[in-house]
Image 1 (tube, helix red, strand yellow):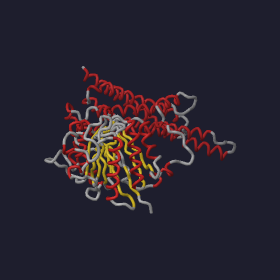
Image 2 (cartoon, helix red, strand yellow):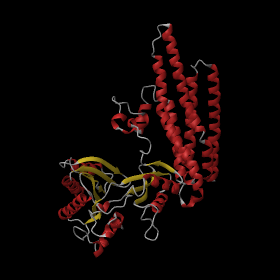
Image 3 (tube, helix red, strand yellow):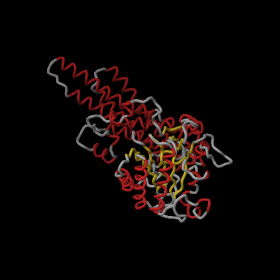
Image 4 (cartoon, rainbow, N blue to C red):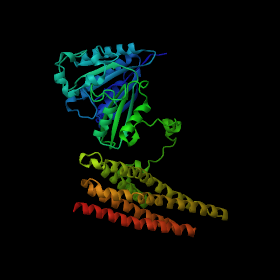
Length: 497
């Protein structure tokens, strides 16, 4: 059985795909190394690589990756949410199979020594490879980050384990060491960056310093905001899950946050191979891309094409989804801000319905197109015999009812949002006034679209009782939408005055 060591180098580049790919190739092209994962973060401006191999191979793979980074990354221009001090910020070695921690300590020392000698950069040993207690934890070594290095390197207590004590602006410094497997666990929050970081400070072992330690042992944590995902996040590392379990971190975060948007880890439910294994998730025949997965340009182009779908129903759903999202945005621009701190409880109550409705309405964009296609398929059925005509008629009626159900669901979803929108109009950050005005009209437009699509599909349904009930219901929803949208606009206009 071969000996396996895992190496997880973190490089300070998360946006330039050419650099990310070049480092990947350096690892892949190293004999004996198998690249398992590449996780790039635009907001953190950091990419985490995971690869395995025999001890001597992973050391060589890490060195090859570092050589590429030395050419392509300039730390003097680096900005990102994640704490960092070097182009290759940290490079841990982890025992996997047939090796122990001592073997990984040897890997870290061999790597650090060769890196410092070849590139002429400062290298620190941490974790199980640390040669002094003060350097055992990564946050201690990285304190002050890249910006503090010019002065820090002049101090005798921070003389590198390998390499010069001089500052290398383009590189910074690197920490390498040996450790157990850690669990990187992120929890996404409906909050600001500052609120997420306060939660992290309360939970992580380091806390706010020696006098204010956090509650959870063997847990590192930081709060930040991911612009590319439009959410705040408490990012934690569980250094020893046997000391602090995953569920404890989650529960303590919930207790602190009061409202959790969604987990950064989706594997807490029972394992379903059809949902979790790639080969099962991807159908044998490549399906067409869904409407909502297309770019906006492609979606608009498809709406304008010579085809029955996507049509007015899909456009109405998209409009309503945008309206709900705008209301959600206006709430988030109010929540967590010092001048609106008294509204935090209100916004925690008002924002989630819009967030949920946006997801539901977005799904209806595709559902509407599919429901109409069912009607078109029914129309193609043969009708040469009485039996075939009966089957065709039944299929058509079923398809028409579904074609009614989708825009009706759209209308009912929009109708459920008016009370929250009315309340938000009275207190939302006035800088978002125009956004909430557009939200009201976008939701009203979605309702109009739902109304017309329900009526057009109702006319060919044979059940008169059903037709009358639905017609009355959708008409009342439309009338209410007109009234409610006008009231929202009036309230917002009065706030401006």
